[in-house]
Length: 331
Image 1 (spheres, helix red, strand yellow):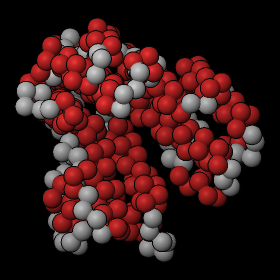
Image 2 (cartoon, rainbow, N blue to C red):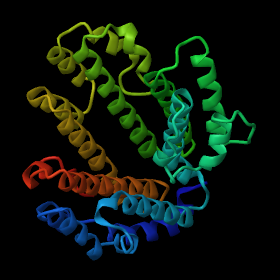
Image 3 (cartoon, rainbow, N blue to C red):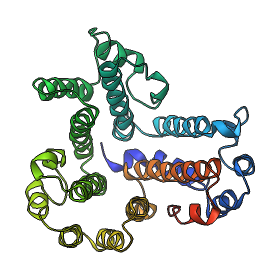
Protein backbone atom coordinates (compact mmCIF):
# COMPACT_ATOMS: atom_id res chain seq x y z
CA UNK A 1 0.00 0.00 0.00
CA UNK A 2 1.44 3.37 -1.02
CA UNK A 3 1.38 6.66 0.84
CA UNK A 4 -1.05 8.11 -1.71
CA UNK A 5 -3.70 5.69 -0.43
CA UNK A 6 -3.82 7.96 2.61
CA UNK A 7 -4.80 11.12 0.70
CA UNK A 8 -8.29 11.14 2.21
CA UNK A 9 -6.82 10.58 5.67
CA UNK A 10 -4.52 13.56 5.16
CA UNK A 11 -7.47 15.88 4.57
CA UNK A 12 -9.32 14.58 7.62
CA UNK A 13 -6.23 14.87 9.84
CA UNK A 14 -5.65 18.50 8.82
CA UNK A 15 -9.25 19.26 9.80
CA UNK A 16 -9.00 17.43 13.13
CA UNK A 17 -5.68 19.04 14.04
CA UNK A 18 -7.45 22.40 14.17
CA UNK A 19 -9.75 21.04 16.87
CA UNK A 20 -7.00 19.87 19.23
CA UNK A 21 -6.69 21.70 22.54
CA UNK A 22 -4.72 24.89 22.13
CA UNK A 23 -2.55 26.80 24.63
CA UNK A 24 -5.47 29.07 25.58
CA UNK A 25 -7.65 26.08 26.49
CA UNK A 26 -4.87 24.62 28.60
CA UNK A 27 -4.17 27.94 30.33
CA UNK A 28 -7.86 28.42 31.19
CA UNK A 29 -8.02 24.97 32.73
CA UNK A 30 -4.82 25.41 34.74
CA UNK A 31 -5.87 28.83 36.04
CA UNK A 32 -9.39 27.68 36.98
CA UNK A 33 -9.94 27.90 40.76
CA UNK A 34 -11.26 24.36 41.19
CA UNK A 35 -12.24 21.11 39.48
CA UNK A 36 -15.72 22.27 38.52
CA UNK A 37 -14.46 25.47 36.90
CA UNK A 38 -11.74 23.59 35.00
CA UNK A 39 -14.33 21.09 33.79
CA UNK A 40 -16.48 23.89 32.36
CA UNK A 41 -13.69 24.69 29.90
CA UNK A 42 -14.51 21.37 28.18
CA UNK A 43 -17.78 22.85 26.96
CA UNK A 44 -15.88 25.33 24.78
CA UNK A 45 -13.72 22.65 23.16
CA UNK A 46 -13.96 19.58 20.95
CA UNK A 47 -14.76 17.57 24.09
CA UNK A 48 -18.20 19.14 24.54
CA UNK A 49 -20.18 16.20 23.13
CA UNK A 50 -18.44 13.83 25.57
CA UNK A 51 -19.15 15.81 28.75
CA UNK A 52 -22.87 16.56 28.46
CA UNK A 53 -23.93 13.91 30.99
CA UNK A 54 -20.66 13.59 32.91
CA UNK A 55 -20.00 15.01 36.38
CA UNK A 56 -16.68 16.84 36.91
CA UNK A 57 -15.39 14.13 39.26
CA UNK A 58 -15.95 11.59 36.46
CA UNK A 59 -13.75 13.45 33.98
CA UNK A 60 -11.86 10.24 33.11
CA UNK A 61 -15.03 8.91 31.46
CA UNK A 62 -15.05 11.94 29.18
CA UNK A 63 -11.39 11.40 28.27
CA UNK A 64 -11.96 7.71 27.48
CA UNK A 65 -14.95 8.65 25.34
CA UNK A 66 -12.89 11.25 23.50
CA UNK A 67 -10.08 8.80 22.73
CA UNK A 68 -12.62 6.20 21.62
CA UNK A 69 -14.09 8.82 19.31
CA UNK A 70 -10.59 9.50 17.95
CA UNK A 71 -10.16 5.77 17.32
CA UNK A 72 -13.41 5.66 15.36
CA UNK A 73 -12.34 8.65 13.27
CA UNK A 74 -8.99 7.01 12.49
CA UNK A 75 -10.80 3.79 11.51
CA UNK A 76 -12.98 5.76 9.13
CA UNK A 77 -10.15 7.68 7.48
CA UNK A 78 -7.52 4.97 6.88
CA UNK A 79 -7.71 2.46 4.00
CA UNK A 80 -7.28 -0.59 6.27
CA UNK A 81 -6.92 -1.56 9.92
CA UNK A 82 -3.11 -1.56 9.98
CA UNK A 83 -2.77 1.94 11.45
CA UNK A 84 -5.51 1.28 14.00
CA UNK A 85 -3.82 -1.96 15.09
CA UNK A 86 -0.44 -0.24 15.42
CA UNK A 87 -1.86 2.51 17.61
CA UNK A 88 -4.40 0.65 19.72
CA UNK A 89 -2.78 -2.72 20.37
CA UNK A 90 -1.23 -1.11 23.47
CA UNK A 91 -4.67 -1.26 25.08
CA UNK A 92 -4.94 -4.98 24.36
CA UNK A 93 -1.71 -5.50 26.26
CA UNK A 94 -2.99 -3.32 29.10
CA UNK A 95 -6.00 -5.62 29.35
CA UNK A 96 -3.76 -8.67 29.13
CA UNK A 97 -1.73 -7.50 32.14
CA UNK A 98 -4.94 -6.74 34.01
CA UNK A 99 -6.38 -10.20 33.44
CA UNK A 100 -3.20 -12.04 34.40
CA UNK A 101 -3.07 -10.02 37.63
CA UNK A 102 -6.76 -10.68 38.26
CA UNK A 103 -6.21 -14.41 37.82
CA UNK A 104 -3.15 -14.35 40.08
CA UNK A 105 -4.89 -12.40 42.87
CA UNK A 106 -8.43 -13.72 42.51
CA UNK A 107 -9.71 -10.15 42.30
CA UNK A 108 -12.22 -8.73 39.84
CA UNK A 109 -10.36 -5.92 38.03
CA UNK A 110 -12.82 -5.41 35.17
CA UNK A 111 -13.42 -1.78 36.15
CA UNK A 112 -9.86 -0.98 35.04
CA UNK A 113 -10.21 -2.59 31.60
CA UNK A 114 -9.63 -0.34 28.60
CA UNK A 115 -12.51 0.04 26.12
CA UNK A 116 -9.95 1.02 23.45
CA UNK A 117 -8.58 -2.45 22.77
CA UNK A 118 -8.73 -4.11 19.38
CA UNK A 119 -9.75 -7.46 20.86
CA UNK A 120 -13.01 -7.81 22.77
CA UNK A 121 -12.28 -7.74 26.48
CA UNK A 122 -14.86 -10.42 27.25
CA UNK A 123 -13.26 -12.78 24.74
CA UNK A 124 -9.78 -12.20 26.16
CA UNK A 125 -11.16 -12.65 29.66
CA UNK A 126 -12.71 -16.01 28.76
CA UNK A 127 -9.31 -17.23 27.54
CA UNK A 128 -7.25 -15.97 30.50
CA UNK A 129 -9.64 -16.37 33.43
CA UNK A 130 -11.77 -19.31 32.30
CA UNK A 131 -9.16 -21.16 30.19
CA UNK A 132 -11.55 -21.30 27.25
CA UNK A 133 -10.50 -21.59 23.61
CA UNK A 134 -11.04 -18.63 21.29
CA UNK A 135 -9.52 -17.15 18.15
CA UNK A 136 -7.55 -14.09 19.24
CA UNK A 137 -5.65 -11.46 17.28
CA UNK A 138 -2.38 -13.00 16.08
CA UNK A 139 -0.23 -10.74 18.26
CA UNK A 140 -2.26 -11.67 21.35
CA UNK A 141 -2.14 -15.38 20.59
CA UNK A 142 1.65 -15.06 20.28
CA UNK A 143 1.81 -13.07 23.54
CA UNK A 144 -0.08 -15.81 25.38
CA UNK A 145 2.36 -18.44 24.10
CA UNK A 146 5.33 -16.29 25.12
CA UNK A 147 3.83 -15.70 28.56
CA UNK A 148 3.23 -19.39 29.21
CA UNK A 149 6.79 -20.26 28.18
CA UNK A 150 8.37 -17.46 30.23
CA UNK A 151 6.51 -18.01 33.50
CA UNK A 152 6.36 -21.82 33.45
CA UNK A 153 9.23 -22.20 35.93
CA UNK A 154 8.92 -18.95 37.88
CA UNK A 155 6.78 -17.67 40.71
CA UNK A 156 4.15 -15.37 39.26
CA UNK A 157 4.36 -11.78 40.52
CA UNK A 158 2.89 -8.47 39.28
CA UNK A 159 6.36 -7.28 38.21
CA UNK A 160 6.95 -10.50 36.24
CA UNK A 161 3.60 -10.06 34.49
CA UNK A 162 4.51 -6.47 33.59
CA UNK A 163 7.93 -7.46 32.26
CA UNK A 164 6.81 -10.41 30.14
CA UNK A 165 3.76 -8.65 28.69
CA UNK A 166 5.76 -5.47 27.96
CA UNK A 167 8.36 -7.50 26.08
CA UNK A 168 5.61 -9.14 24.00
CA UNK A 169 3.97 -5.78 23.36
CA UNK A 170 7.11 -4.12 22.05
CA UNK A 171 7.90 -7.10 19.81
CA UNK A 172 4.41 -6.90 18.32
CA UNK A 173 4.59 -3.10 18.11
CA UNK A 174 7.91 -3.14 16.27
CA UNK A 175 6.65 -5.80 13.87
CA UNK A 176 3.53 -3.74 13.10
CA UNK A 177 5.67 -0.62 12.56
CA UNK A 178 8.05 -2.38 10.15
CA UNK A 179 5.12 -3.31 7.90
CA UNK A 180 4.65 0.34 6.92
CA UNK A 181 8.22 0.67 5.60
CA UNK A 182 8.17 4.19 7.05
CA UNK A 183 11.35 5.46 8.66
CA UNK A 184 9.25 8.04 10.55
CA UNK A 185 7.03 5.40 12.17
CA UNK A 186 9.84 2.97 12.89
CA UNK A 187 12.00 5.69 14.46
CA UNK A 188 9.06 6.76 16.61
CA UNK A 189 8.70 3.23 17.98
CA UNK A 190 12.46 3.03 18.54
CA UNK A 191 12.37 6.25 20.55
CA UNK A 192 9.52 4.90 22.69
CA UNK A 193 11.61 1.81 23.41
CA UNK A 194 14.50 4.09 24.41
CA UNK A 195 12.29 5.93 26.89
CA UNK A 196 11.07 2.66 28.43
CA UNK A 197 14.63 1.37 28.74
CA UNK A 198 16.02 4.57 30.25
CA UNK A 199 13.30 4.46 32.93
CA UNK A 200 14.16 0.83 33.70
CA UNK A 201 17.85 1.76 33.93
CA UNK A 202 17.30 4.76 36.22
CA UNK A 203 15.16 2.72 38.61
CA UNK A 204 17.70 -0.12 38.69
CA UNK A 205 20.72 2.12 39.35
CA UNK A 206 18.77 4.16 41.93
CA UNK A 207 17.96 0.98 43.83
CA UNK A 208 21.49 -0.41 43.45
CA UNK A 209 20.20 -3.57 41.77
CA UNK A 210 22.63 -6.01 40.20
CA UNK A 211 22.27 -6.31 36.38
CA UNK A 212 20.96 -9.86 36.59
CA UNK A 213 17.97 -8.46 38.52
CA UNK A 214 16.86 -6.06 35.79
CA UNK A 215 18.75 -6.56 32.51
CA UNK A 216 16.08 -8.95 31.23
CA UNK A 217 13.64 -6.04 31.45
CA UNK A 218 15.58 -4.09 28.77
CA UNK A 219 13.60 -4.14 25.53
CA UNK A 220 15.39 -5.04 22.31
CA UNK A 221 15.32 -2.69 19.35
CA UNK A 222 16.30 0.58 20.99
CA UNK A 223 19.29 2.82 20.32
CA UNK A 224 21.28 1.21 23.15
CA UNK A 225 21.29 -2.56 23.57
CA UNK A 226 21.22 -4.55 26.79
CA UNK A 227 24.99 -5.12 27.18
CA UNK A 228 25.72 -1.40 27.05
CA UNK A 229 23.24 -0.75 29.87
CA UNK A 230 24.84 -3.53 31.93
CA UNK A 231 28.32 -2.05 31.48
CA UNK A 232 27.18 1.33 32.79
CA UNK A 233 25.25 -0.09 35.73
CA UNK A 234 28.19 -0.34 38.13
CA UNK A 235 28.78 3.42 38.14
CA UNK A 236 27.13 6.07 40.35
CA UNK A 237 23.83 7.30 38.89
CA UNK A 238 25.20 10.65 37.65
CA UNK A 239 28.16 9.04 35.88
CA UNK A 240 26.03 6.20 34.50
CA UNK A 241 23.41 8.54 33.05
CA UNK A 242 26.00 10.94 31.66
CA UNK A 243 27.59 7.99 29.87
CA UNK A 244 24.20 6.78 28.68
CA UNK A 245 23.16 10.22 27.40
CA UNK A 246 26.10 10.34 24.99
CA UNK A 247 24.44 7.58 22.92
CA UNK A 248 21.36 9.60 22.10
CA UNK A 249 20.31 12.61 20.04
CA UNK A 250 20.68 16.10 21.47
CA UNK A 251 17.08 16.38 22.71
CA UNK A 252 17.27 13.04 24.52
CA UNK A 253 20.60 14.05 26.02
CA UNK A 254 19.13 17.32 27.30
CA UNK A 255 16.22 15.49 28.98
CA UNK A 256 18.60 13.06 30.72
CA UNK A 257 21.05 15.75 31.79
CA UNK A 258 18.20 17.91 33.10
CA UNK A 259 17.11 14.95 35.23
CA UNK A 260 20.61 14.82 36.72
CA UNK A 261 20.15 18.38 37.98
CA UNK A 262 16.79 17.94 39.69
CA UNK A 263 16.26 14.15 40.04
CA UNK A 264 12.55 14.63 39.27
CA UNK A 265 10.95 11.65 37.54
CA UNK A 266 7.82 13.70 36.83
CA UNK A 267 9.89 16.30 34.99
CA UNK A 268 11.79 13.59 33.13
CA UNK A 269 8.47 12.09 31.98
CA UNK A 270 7.37 15.52 30.77
CA UNK A 271 10.66 16.16 28.97
CA UNK A 272 10.61 12.78 27.21
CA UNK A 273 7.07 13.38 26.03
CA UNK A 274 8.07 16.82 24.77
CA UNK A 275 10.90 15.20 22.80
CA UNK A 276 8.39 12.78 21.28
CA UNK A 277 5.98 15.59 20.44
CA UNK A 278 8.73 17.57 18.75
CA UNK A 279 9.51 14.50 16.65
CA UNK A 280 5.93 13.84 15.53
CA UNK A 281 5.51 17.50 14.53
CA UNK A 282 7.47 16.53 11.40
CA UNK A 283 4.21 15.04 10.11
CA UNK A 284 2.81 18.56 9.79
CA UNK A 285 5.07 19.02 6.78
CA UNK A 286 4.15 15.74 5.06
CA UNK A 287 1.59 15.74 2.26
CA UNK A 288 0.10 12.32 2.90
CA UNK A 289 0.89 8.83 4.17
CA UNK A 290 0.24 6.68 7.26
CA UNK A 291 2.49 9.03 9.22
CA UNK A 292 -0.31 11.64 9.42
CA UNK A 293 -2.97 9.58 11.27
CA UNK A 294 -0.20 8.15 13.47
CA UNK A 295 0.98 11.64 14.41
CA UNK A 296 -2.62 12.77 14.98
CA UNK A 297 -3.19 9.93 17.46
CA UNK A 298 -0.15 10.89 19.52
CA UNK A 299 -1.11 14.57 19.36
CA UNK A 300 -4.58 13.69 20.64
CA UNK A 301 -3.13 11.43 23.32
CA UNK A 302 -0.75 14.21 24.37
CA UNK A 303 -3.71 16.56 24.81
CA UNK A 304 -5.57 13.97 26.89
CA UNK A 305 -2.52 13.47 29.12
CA UNK A 306 -2.41 17.21 29.73
CA UNK A 307 -6.09 17.31 30.62
CA UNK A 308 -5.76 14.31 32.94
CA UNK A 309 -2.79 15.95 34.66
CA UNK A 310 -4.66 19.24 35.13
CA UNK A 311 -7.92 17.69 36.33
CA UNK A 312 -6.15 15.32 38.71
CA UNK A 313 -4.24 18.30 40.09
CA UNK A 314 -7.45 20.26 40.62
CA UNK A 315 -9.06 17.25 42.26
CA UNK A 316 -6.17 17.06 44.72
CA UNK A 317 -5.98 20.83 45.36
CA UNK A 318 -2.54 21.16 43.80
CA UNK A 319 -1.55 24.76 43.09
CA UNK A 320 -1.82 26.01 39.52
CA UNK A 321 1.87 26.93 39.40
CA UNK A 322 2.85 23.34 40.23
CA UNK A 323 0.49 21.93 37.61
CA UNK A 324 1.81 24.38 35.02
CA UNK A 325 5.33 23.10 35.58
CA UNK A 326 4.36 19.61 34.45
CA UNK A 327 2.28 20.50 31.40
CA UNK A 328 3.49 18.93 28.16
CA UNK A 329 4.06 20.97 25.01
CA UNK A 330 1.10 21.46 22.66
CA UNK A 331 1.09 19.88 19.18
